[in-house]
Length: 267
Ligand SMILES: NC(=O)c1ccc[n+]([C@@H]2O[C@H](COP(=O)([O-])OP(=O)(O)OC[C@H]3O[C@@H](n4cnc5c(N)ncnc54)[C@H](O)[C@@H]3O)[C@@H](O)[C@H]2O)c1
Image 1 (cartoon, rainbow, N blue to C red):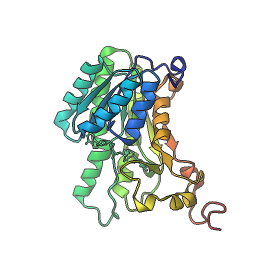
Image 2: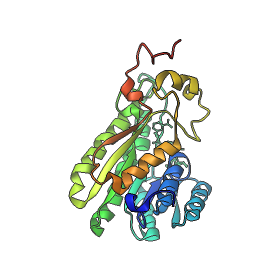
Image 3: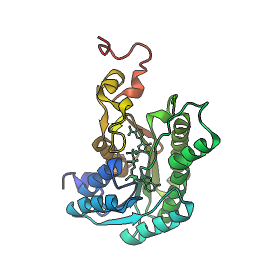
Image 4: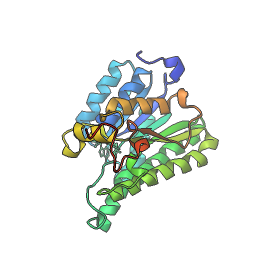
């Protein structure tokens, strides 16, 4: 195994990845399976989930794939039940699905707002509740990881509903961390900065030149770096980490750049 399984404590643990078919979800599945965890992969696209399942199995652990849409409330009990049945229980949830809709506050309609809350916050609440219910019934504890964003912690011009939803996710994770701690369940969020993902790779506003002027480490992050953060949070290395936001942003939030820019970035 590439990771030290004894230190991470993930051998034989069962990890459910929502949106496991590509990008951050794929990297998470790869890293936790290298550390010995079994993985249930939920995705809208069967071929994506199957491809990641093959990677997990090549790492020597079990994988189950579940085709489903977490934005449909009625599917959530079935999705979680299939994961529990397929792996014999769930010890950790890593929930990846989310996306920003671009537009100013003035351009954002009530329907846009609702859609952003559904895609970035509401399903995460319902899936986490279903998974935590099983964890509480089994009495073995567990952990939950949601994907927030730097946008949930500062103003998010041109994606205000997204930022509000991610801020809500952070608050929700803190409440889970408090309400479910008596059951041995930890809950945390990862806040990515600018990450190169399959979906966003070619988006012009994410180009490296832009990143180099905004991000202290002078580059965008990788899905590997998000997968490793998820690996840490679900592992025993994070056994006393509960209710936190782990910024994985190259120092973006720390920099407070406007209006001067990074030292040397503007010549
Ligand atoms: N890329 C960045 O720079 C960045 C920055 C901050 C936060 N984020 C957050 O990171 C997360 C991952 O974003 P991404 O672009 O890598 O993900 P993505 O859009 O590539 O989605 C990951 C997987 O989820 C699946 N999926 C999408 N909707 C689903 C649904 N309703 N039900 C089941 N599966 C579904 C997709 O098929 C895909 O395989 C999001 O929450 C996003 O808000 C990204």
